[in-house]
Amino acid sequence: MTYHVIYDGNCNLCVTLVQLLESLDKGQMFQYIPMQEIEALKHFGVTAQDCEMGMILIDANTPQRRWQGSDAAEEIGRLLPMGSVFVDAYRALPGVKWMGDRTYEQIRDNRYTIFGKRSSTYQSSYPASFCSTGCVTE
Image: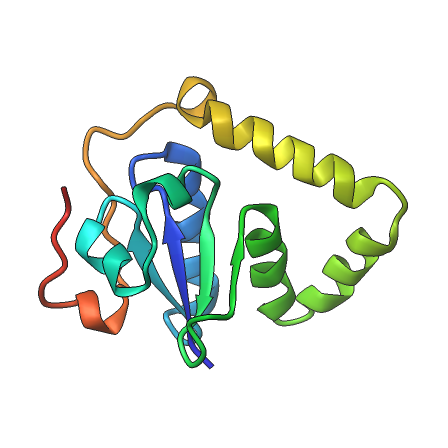
């Protein structure tokens, strides 16, 4: 299965996490689209406003199947080898998921202040296949 990860290519934290995921996955399961690539977002019916609510994970085989924000982060973790054990435990502990969701929202809304903003948009070594020759960054 292939998944598309839509991330903030100008956010230092987001890019660091994408780079970590790239090193773990090597493009086997995940392909990446910076939210700054407006044309690529249109391919999925995703708007810039949608992206403000956090990262988006899209099942490439069934694009209607998608996760956003902390749910996307959890699903990515679940898909990694042995990840489901940790994600299931995280979800099972009373109050932890709620706290994780609130923490994600705070970091999302203050990411540039806390972690800084890149001077240029990060382009993954594993872009979505339809982007590899022509998505436009605006």
